[in-house]
Amino acid sequence: MSLNPDEVRRITRLARIELSPAEVEQTMDQLNAVFGLIEQLKAADTIGIQPMAHAVDVSQRLREDRVTETDRHIDFQKIAPDTEAGLYLVPKVIE
Image (cartoon, rainbow, N blue to C red):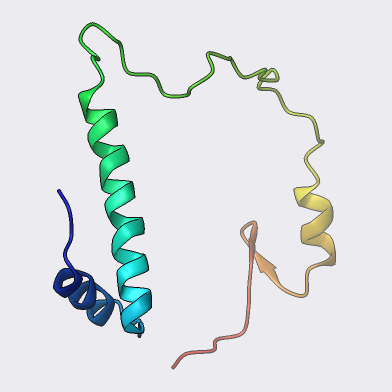
């Protein structure tokens, strides 16, 4: 696939980008180079290759899922301005 100057102008109009005629030519060349690279990637033989989630096969070091802090809920409830049934009460802001 390759773009012509009219298509590049249409794309720039849709993107709300203003380009001079010289910039249109330069942009067209750059976009066509990108499309050429995509065509090269499509031409690569990928039969039998398993998709990967990441380019490098690494595993995350995960910590043990355990509680590391003590429950201070009651301490925070004591200093709150207003609580009820373990919930914080706040002023009504929407009527």
